[in-house]
Image (cartoon, rainbow, N blue to C red):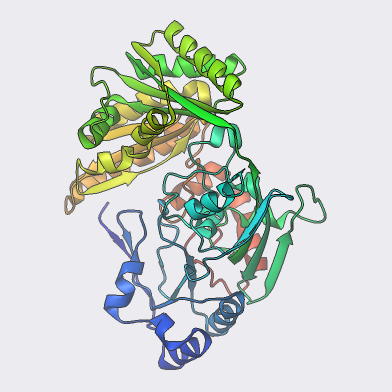
Length: 469
């Protein structure tokens, strides 16, 4: 699959550029090649399209004015945060304006009394988590790119993360939104309440809409009391199937861990070569398990999970003895992608979801598919919720390998659906998964999405070429 460069449409005319400069300031409108080229792609490899201009607004009012102008002129607008998404959600397939929201970067409020935070979309996930922690609170969503991913982006893609099994994903914490529709209208959905069923749940509809329905300009998020303690352990297994059986036994025992992650043998080897964490290289799979809460309860659950892993045939099981050691275990999981990236010049990280009992079966299919298409694919992911990340490494310029990877992933997506799963558990659809969306949802549901989009964005300017277009 060679780089997908698409027609970018007409360049923005001088009058439109002048009006954009009048709205946000001349220094915040860029259209020269050197300025806009970095915004032609996001963290998704093999997708690229040049925008006509890059605009950096600093307020909801400026966003609204840009969208009113764009709607009147028929100019596409692609909202963007840090561009760390992995589904080509922010590639401007039809050119136009890339609207970068990173200047809206303030945490507006942390309320310990109400257990909520209010922030602008350009705040990073890690910065919000740190602000909450300073008040003894927890912002639970924990995406792998938390240090750079913006809150607006994680809401727009409904990001998941390492704590998804116990705590859920981003949509479980979005209480309210301020958003600008494709018409330039500003709406507020939801609010500050944990319970509010007045009218349609537009907050949930905007969450995960990938910038196709509105531009998020403010977010109200639920927080939780920070757990008193946390701990982690690891278990090595002869095969990934053995690790999968251990996961089933842990859940069947009534334990809902905060962390339950797996790495296949290829991932373990890559992480050890990259980070030198002392991981074993003779195992078929590594399972990282963890929990948080009251210290005695955490210790008890960790011991139970360790025992269940031993009973399921683990080669070796250990529980971290202190916080630094526990964090080192999570580092093994967090550095999997950079470790795999060292194996080639292009790393294609995908995600599929299957019912938990079918994880090992799905990984077996992935291995067979990789061999059949002659590509290197390593798999890691969230064992507790059935979310797998098959990751293919190829070399830049090898178009034949890229095509083989494309065919392999198409087969992987369809296999996940055949097993009762989905084409994406947390990354989103974007342009990368759009060819498979109708297979996943059915034609009637896709057509309904188009009608919904038309109500929010009658001119069709918001992130065209993505879901709902």
